[in-house]
Length: 289
Image (cartoon, rainbow, N blue to C red; front, side, top):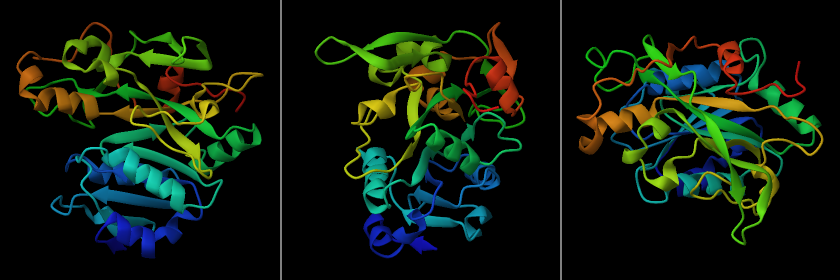
């Protein structure tokens, strides 16, 4: 199913948002759209809504009956919170949603043999309405062979260099169970990254509720949604393995010529397996065994 605009989708196609989990795929360019859709179709999403500029050629995967395509320029100012918030408002309360970009891949503990729906159900049983995700930067190991920095077969990630800082509220108080997380390419090449975009935490998995609003910094207006754990024990977290930062650094003339390779002593090949991410401490199962 295709819709000519976000307004048309909300008027005639929003029924696909009624049963979660729903993935909102925000397409910024033509890079790895097919692999993004295949990965998340295989994860068990009941519906995937693709938001893409009409000029971007879409792959055959959009013919899957679970996929809906909406014409939308995702490079426009304010596009991503606008799209996500419109879908939140249109969906029934309590619907699990995930939002991500093309060339990003959701991994969660034991995802090789457990569906995304099972993960959301577990979180719900723990009285959690959100699952914190960490954006783990991926990059091609050989930029001579892959000058766009994107390669599924040659994907690498950083095994070290991640840290967290106390999050402060506007009045200076410490935000309870909230931290600002940093690392990956945004940390190593921070001179090319605006300060407001250096964090790698994103509340990408959440349940809808009336009035819930996603903010431009990838956090929500409900403080509990932004927490990394519940009050009584550690909670499950997930990772979005993403080529987005790498491709931006190589596409931007201000940074591209300063980067001959993204590899450094702490680079390791990405195994495309959840166990590697858990072993590196980039996500955790909490009480989900």
